[in-house]
Amino acid sequence: MSKSPRALARLAAAGVAVAALVVVPAAGASAHVRVVPESTTAGAWTTLTFRVPNESPTAVTTSVAVDLPTDTPFLGVSTKPVPGWTASVEEGDLPQSVDVDGTTITRAPVRVVWTADDEKAAIGDGEFQELEISVGPLPAAGTTLVLPAEQSYSDGSVVAWDDVATGDDEPEHPAPALVVTEDTTGAGHGAAHGDTEDADGVTTEATTSEQTTSETTSSDGVARALGGVGVLLGGTAVAVAVTGRRRATGGE
Image (tube, rainbow, N blue to C red; front, side):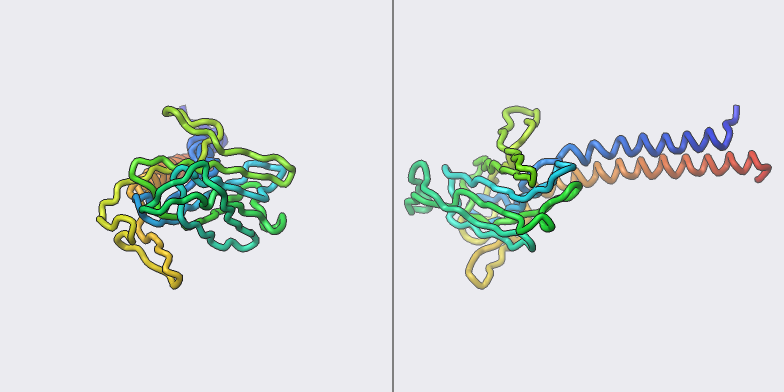
C-alpha cells in the first residue's frame, strides 16, 4: 500500500532525527578537560594543549588551574598568550629532591593558572577554549603524567577533574593524563627529529605523537561515518517524499 505524501514526510523527519541521535552522544562523550600532547617522547620538550569545554548552561568558566607533576617535575614551563586571559606559573618546593640529568632539583613549577580578564573573555555555554604550555624535558618512557585540573565558574562552583582511571571505565571527572613513550630518534634529552628552536633557545617539538595521531584519526573517522549516515538517510527520505507528492498530484 502506497503512503501519502504527508506520511512520507513524517518518515523523512524521523530518519533525520534518528541520525542526529546517533551523532550527538559521540560528541558529548568527551565533554571534559583533556590534555593533547604535541609529543610524548621521553626526554623531549613538548606543547601540552588543555581543551576546556564549558559545561554549565547558566555560568561561564572564569578560571582553569592545572597541577604539574612533582615526582617527575618539569625543569621549565612557559605559557602561550591567550587574548583576554592572564596566565601564571607557580613554583614550589618538591615533596622530596629529584635528580634530573645529574642535577638535584628541590623546587620546580608546580601549578599553572589561567584567569579570564572579564566575563566577555570567559568560556560561555556551548564554547571551549584551548590553553597551551610548553614543558620539558619529559621523564622516562612508560611514565604516566597525571595533570589534575580545576575549572571555576562565575557562579562560584568549581569542578575538580582529578579522578584517575583504574580500569577500562572512565571515571566521572577524569584527570587529564598522558603516557610518555620511547625516544626512537636517538636524540635523548636534546631536540628530537623535526624540532625547532626559538630565539630564546627553547626547543619546541614539531612532530606529533603516534598515539595522539591515531586517536584523532580514529575519532574523525567515526564522526565522518556517522555524519554520512545522517546525510544519506535525510537525502533518501526527502527523495521519497518528493516522489510521493508527484504521484499524488498526477505527476511523472
